[in-house]
Image 1 (cartoon, rainbow over the protein chains, first blue to last red):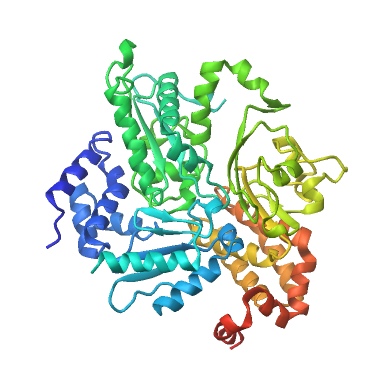
Image 2: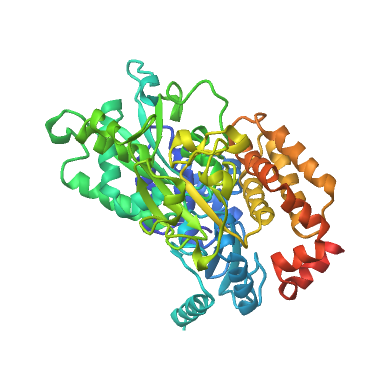
Length: 162
Length: 389
C-alpha cells in the first residue's frame, strides 16, 4: 500500500491550498515531485494514489507523468547522473564526459549499475550552457565537468553510501 | 505593452504568471537573476501584481532549477515577514501572494499557453490563440505572462522613471539586455549590455567574452538562442552591406534570415574553427524532436526526420539529395504549427544549410574523414559498425 509520509501529506495540503476551489488538479506537477522524492520513482500504484489525493482520474496522472521528462516511470539508481548533451555542452566536450562515465561505470546511457547505485541518463539543455559540460545530480548541478571531477563525484557518492 | 490587453471583467480575479521556464539552448540569464538577485524579481512581481490587480501571482520555474525554488521561496518568505506580501501591503489595501510552481522538464512549457496548461496540471500542449491569455488564461481568468527579465526590469523602470530607462541603448533597442554568452569563449557567463557595443568587441574584449578559447579562430555564432539562424564570421561581424554589426535588435536582424539573424533570447553561442556545424545542428534537431509536444504533425514528424537525416549525414552515410530533402522538410514545418516550436526547429536547420552547405557536402564526399574528425574512430568504432549495418 503506497502512502506518503505525514510530513509530505502536510506539504501536499499546503500546495493544494494555493489554487482556487475546485482547481486542485493544478497541484499535480508539484505533488508528483513530492511523491518521487519519497519513492524514487512513480509506479502505477503511486500515480493512482496521487490521483486519489487530488480527486482526479488516474489517466489524468498517467498522461502528465509520461509527458514530462523529469518523472521516472521506472526505478533508477540511487544517484542519477543526468548529463546534458545539447549544442553548447557538445561544443565543450559533453560527448567525452558521457563516454567516460559510461566506461567507468560500465553502463550505457539509460542504464543503471548492477548494485543499483548509479544511473546514467543523457538529457537535453538544462540551462547551464555557460558552465558546460555539466550534469544534474539530485537537486543540484555539477558544472565545468572534467574527467577528474567526474571521478571525485563518483567517489563522493560511494563514500556517502559506506 | 502586453499589459494593455488584459481584460478586466467585474468580479473575475486576474493573475500574473512569471515565465521562468528558461530552456532555450544557449540561454541561462533568468537563472542568474533568480539565483543571485531573487529579491529584485520578487519586488518586480509585487509591483507588477499591484499594477495589474493580481492578488495571487505565480512564478512558473523549470523543474531542473530545483535549488532555485528554495532561494525564491526564502525571498518570498522574507518579503512576507516584512509586510511586502500578504494582506494590506504597507497599508495600501492591496493583498498579494506569490507562489513558485515547479515544472518537470519540458521546453514547450516556455510557450505561454503551454505554461498555463502545465500550471493547471496538464500536459504542456499549447492552446490555439485566440483567445489570448490576457482574456482567457489560467483557469479561464485574464492572465498576463511575462518573463523573468521583463518583470525584473520593472523595478528600475519604476525607480528611475520610464524616460530615464529608455535613454539607455539606441534606437528601438532601449534599456539594457542580458546576454548569456557560451560556447568556445574564454569568459562564458551572463553580461548586461546597453546594446551599443559591436559584436566584434563583445566577443574579443576582455570586458566581455574575452576572445576565443585556446587561441583558436572564430568560425560562427548563434547570437540569440538555439532557434535563431547561425551566422558565419564574415556575416556575424559585418552586415551584408559592410556595416559593423552591433549587439542590438535592429543590427542583429539586419539582412533578414538571408544574411542576418536575431537577438532572440540573448543566448550567444560561439563556435571555434574546429567545431562541426552539421554535428551541432544535429544536436539541436535532436533537442527539438525531444521537446516537440506532438500535437501538430509537421513538427512531431518533421523534427524526427530532420534528426535522422542529420545523424546520417554526420555519420558519413548521407547522400547529396539528403541536403535538399532536409531543406524541404524544414520549409514544410515553418509556419504550419500551432506554436512557434516548429519554426524554432526549422530555422537552425535552414540557416546551417544556407551558410554551410559546403560543410554538409564535405560530409558526403569524405565519409571516412567525417567519422574520424567528428567521432574519433577508436572510441566509436562499435557505434559506426551499428550505423553501417
